[in-house]
Length: 298
Ligand SMILES: Nc1ncnc2c1ncn2[C@@H]1O[C@H](COP(=O)(O)OP(=O)(O)OP(=O)(O)O)[C@@H](O)[C@H]1O
Ligand SMILES: [Mg+2]
Image (cartoon, rainbow, N blue to C red; front, top):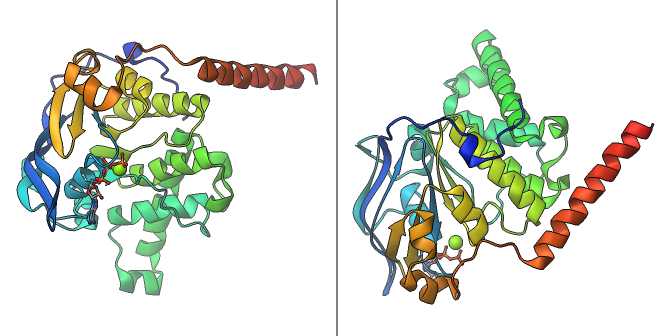
């Protein structure tokens, strides 16, 4: 299956949201520097929540506190009401997967193998079983491959399953990171700048992918600096400035908040794409049309 959803408005009416991920009073200090200051945030079922803020605001540090990479100096993070253990693989097992701001793939492994690595927290077979390669292990391996291929199909990378990940174009490497995170069967997916370095067309495709992920029943918390992406994607947005949550609300509320404008946006967000972006999207679409009509001509 490939993603088909293109508009937020075409999504089915969400059922009443229940809180999945909840951070309460999270503080993270590094020596004398307080990177995250008493931040509360929730992510509910069916939600896409955005986290914005200037460089160095503490967004990635907060993600690290949510995913067991850092143990918060103070505060608590729960998932479905249970306090999360301070170990990344246990957090993944509990149901929270993430991608990283700087792509972290195994560059000498294939695309499929990278997704299989993300799957290992969901396979029960132990070391002995793996060494003996008995029927239980072979069955588990076959199931993991089938699921990994389904996920690659979902993100649109199935045809490249056997390529080395380092040979993928940059935008597809970011997609593969998302596929690997999805392989952990998360209830909540955390994305740290998923469109960084992408062209406008790739950014739009990523937006559609995030909507499709949400429609699969996975809640999303996403950090981005691309405001058009964030404000047209998210149900709710929180803005961090100097480690503190300045404002939280609907995109309409956050984008017009004077404090967010002066601390981060600079000028009020008007939602209109810049002329360079319009030109780039039009050129890419014209090239795609050309490719289609050439194929039809053959
Ligand atoms: N391991 C660490 N040790 C010491 N200081 C750190 C550490 N990790 C982050 N910081 C500091 O914490 C602050 C917040 O950094 P963080 O990377 O969380 O910001 P960010 O909001 O993700 O920024 P960006 O938008 O640039 O990614 C920065 O001042 C950073 O230097
Ligand atoms: Mg960051």
